[in-house]
Length: 83
Image (cartoon, rainbow, N blue to C red; front, top):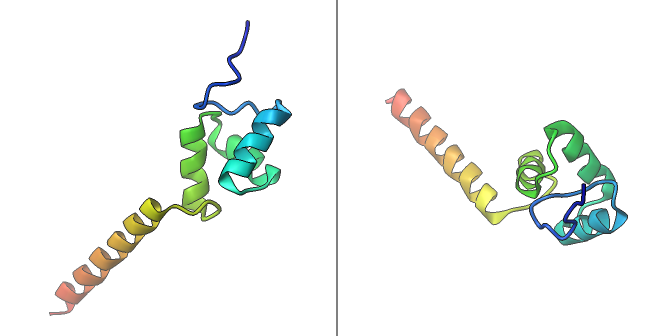
């Protein structure tokens, strides 16, 4: 079986060039990448990226906006409940 190592959707942790590419691209270290692969059980870059963003290891403006929106909604709900 031949793997397409140039596929941007999959991360092959046994290939040092892949590991180097993704760690440099996301600004993380090898430990975080390997831990994300183990925790998610996936080698899909989208799944791993989401995991890293949720853990706060990888920064994303979109994820920050979503968390801020949820916080504001919770605050508004608490304010309404107190009235």
